[in-house]
Amino acid sequence: MDLTTPMVSPRTLELAQALVRINTVSANSNLPLIHLVRDELARLGVTSRLTFNADKTKANLFATLGEGKPAGVILSGHTDTVPWDGQDWSGDPLDGSVRDGKLFGRGSADMKSFIAIALAHANDFLHSNAPFAIHLAFSYDEEVGCFGVRELIGDLRDAGISPLACIIGEPTSMVPAIAHKGVYRYKCCVRGKEAHSSLTPRSVNAIEMAARLVGKLRDMAEGFERDEPRYPGFDVPFSTASVGQFHGGIADNVVPRDAEFRYEFRDLPTADARAMQQDLVSHARSLEPAMKRVAPEAGFQFETLCEVPSFLGSAADGITRLAQRLSGEERTTQVAFGTEAGLFKNAGIPTVVCGPGSIEQAHQADEYVSLDQLARCEAFMRGLAAVREIG
Image 1 (cartoon, rainbow, N blue to C red):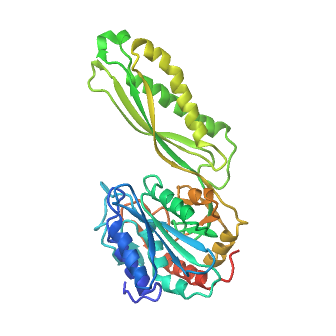
Image 2 (image 1 turned 135 degrees about the vertical axis):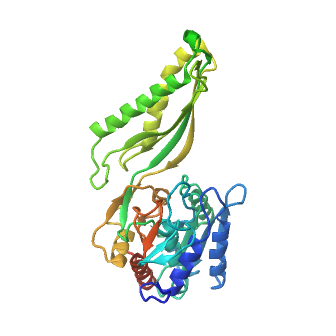
Image 3 (image 1 turned 90 degrees about the horizontal axis):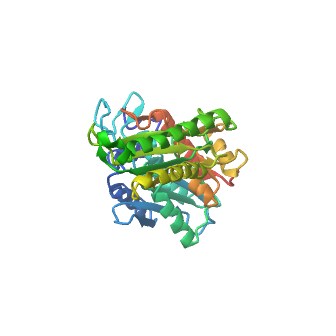
């Protein structure tokens, strides 16, 4: 595909390829990408605010296009990607190649193309006659728990910056999304008491005790499916619970002292994942007295891995109506995947999720976004630069 294709501006495609070619798997630093964005904005005379993780290896970026205007609309995206280990790619996941009307590469759909399009239109936003500013907010570690954006939102609060609304450019095929489930992940470590397997009454079998909690989780999941009021529009219209990893034991003839499992709840916007977690913890505590009669040190320990709140916007919100108008979509949708939207919404910022590409291509081998989707998002950005009011 010729880079001068009229479907997508050469600048957008150039930036999207440049971002895809930077390896920002969550285990790595995202600073090369953040510095690229910072330097591009600096050429336009725009100063970026950076907020860092504890060891300064990762950063969020926040920049305002239209200083002096009333607080405006955030264009939000995460800079990290999932890994591709073990996936059967037909080429280099970082090559950013364009073929058959598609941009390929890790992060092309989720969600570097949106960041590139926002950056490519920064000059339009700077010289816009819109009565409000445009803010760019690019975060780290979304894929592993939405950790970076919490620092970014905290920095905005401390700085007294109160945006009017937020558009998160996750891949929704440019259909505004107004709801998604939460994602709450935990680790449970079980300490028992080891013994020779011929002397089981003198032991506490950590695997068996862990299995009792796993069974409780299964019962909870079946209860959600059986009893929870349905929320139409989701692929799975009820909350879910599942175990993702389980480890324990060292030999067939040794009663295991230790076991560990990881699990998650995906709660509807109308449900309460923390109450689900407390229900499981309470069940664990009810099992501990019998364990401790054999071994006082036995018991359960829980660790929070991530808590990404569910999101519930509204078709009546001004930012939703604006996104519909700019995308040319009369409908709204709900998405199955988690985003940073709940965190922005909980900070008092009306939010909608709308971006190019499909989640069906994200996290997959040969991830791609179609150039048609990029063109639609560019039209969205041009329209945003020309709007007179939100809603």
